[in-house]
Amino acid sequence: MNRLAALSAQITAVLGRLAPLLPLMLRVTFAATLLGYYWKSAATKLLDRAEPGLRDWLTLESGVYAQIFPRQFEAAGYDPDQLSVLHGAIAAAGTLAELLLPLLIIAGLMTRLAALGMIGFVVVQTATDVIGHGAMPGALFDGRYQLLDERLLWCALLATLVVTGAGALSFDRLIAPRLHPA
Image 1 (tube, helix red, strand yellow):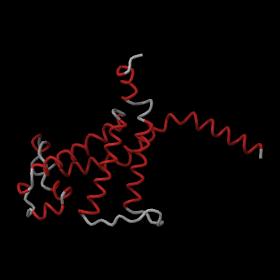
Image 2 (spheres, rainbow, N blue to C red; image 1 turned 180 degrees about the horizontal axis):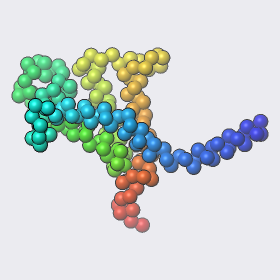
Image 3 (spheres, rainbow, N blue to C red; image 1 turned 90 degrees about the horizontal axis):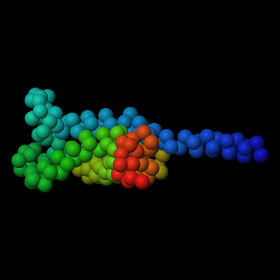
Image 4 (spheres, rainbow, N blue to C red; image 1 turned 45 degrees about the vertical axis):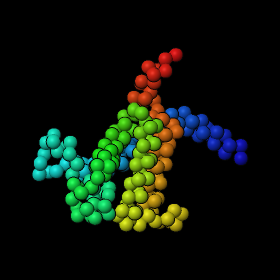
């Protein structure tokens, strides 16, 4: 039993020295698994392959309303001009969030705030999928991997970044001495 306790203590000591790398590992994991997902989603809201150019990047495609406000957009006859200015502002803010928040997390810049924003984004996204698009959320603890299980994993990753921050290899760490001089 003493050997097992000693081995456990050695493993704990090694893992304790690796703990500062956890935020970097989480940011790399986010980049590898979710960056493409969110940027592709944002691209569907901005890019019209028929009209490439800078103007295209500055205007929202009508499909953004189908994604974010499916029921209201259908009620408006799929005409974006029939929706309110508030709908447009929410669509623009959501698209901007899909582009910028993942970039901030990966760069490790304002990481805690960006990760908190992404958690809010995932909650709203999930509610839209379930309420607006009729997706089946599934149930936790039922042994099946469905929407709620997936989004809970995403939020757990992001919540860890909210608590730990970006870690050593980040812009947050680089600029911290300038923000809080000794």
